[in-house]
Image (tube, rainbow, N blue to C red; front, side):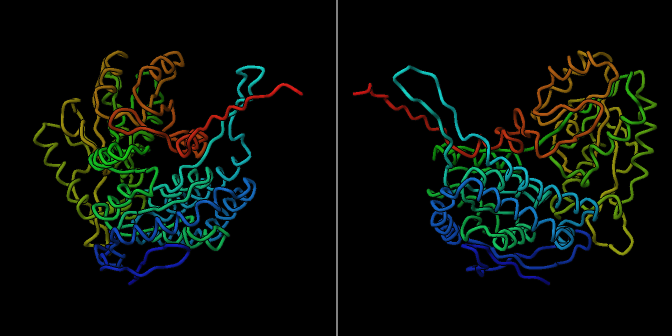
Length: 475
């Protein structure tokens, strides 16, 4: 049974309030207690960040890069410990947890290497004017992350924010807080100055809102639900501060009749079951051309039935989400979808109270059904038939979301045509979701705005200032 406190100003700070129970989703039992932060804790964290901001901003770029590289090395050196913490909070398989730790380290490594890029441009305006631009940090950046990929998504925002010269006040989900605290501790040991990363634990309604409303916070990066993103957006609009919002998805996965059917079926199943479907970029709407529809269903059913909850598939991380996914089984029956596989709670030996869902596939779904329109956030995929390329594009774009799209075809001209017309931030052809730290990530429509990852992310963590100098004539 662990007890987790805030990390403020380079040290552990006990809760000034109460503690929240954290439940292991594999066992369904309380595993620890997490500080229930307050607005006063956010005040302390912002003050610590502001005290560190000027020195960190003025660090030589090369030195900032060395610190970022040292953090990456520290995460890798402690990857087994971090993966164990991640598993305790989320229940995900060890291989998945280790991959996420590696991805977290890669963010610090990648952005640490970008400190040598030019920080602005020289503009040719007039012979008697020297005009240049420079990028400057906002100052204190609030980072609010969800429970599905705890350390990875914290690193995804924190690494570019620090590289750009900002300081951070972070709030992980209260149900998956251990690795974010561990990362802050390791960063301090790796040489990050006190106050550059601060972590305040607690609920979104209290701590998250306090971060967004705090007058000392000049930019917020949020990953989570559309509803919370909208609420944050209203506060940010009042305060006139910039946001990066990475929200939900109901991504279309289009399988044309000339595709490698076995590969498409296998990867399509991975697309909605990875991390037990708890990823915003899950390819949960599978659009299949009618001529191969039945054969695809046979191949996809086999791939679904090969997955073993508790081994290749982890639990649903929170109890409310566990109940919500089960509710969609009733919705599917009411809407007339045909169950192909799953559609029930999975019983895992030794974990009678675990939050496991059998990987589930529905067929004969129309795009107006609720299971085709609402983000389920569990290992549930729906298969929708189509006849023509134009119909596939229309169905794919008939969604409130636009995060990713996937195409399966051997026709490169078709792939380029369709990719151009899909309303999504990322398109994959004949491969599912192979994003790296180098590839910008973000959505259209209700999937959010702004971009994380890649060089593009740095543009969202700083102002551009233009300086114009009159060049005097000699004498």
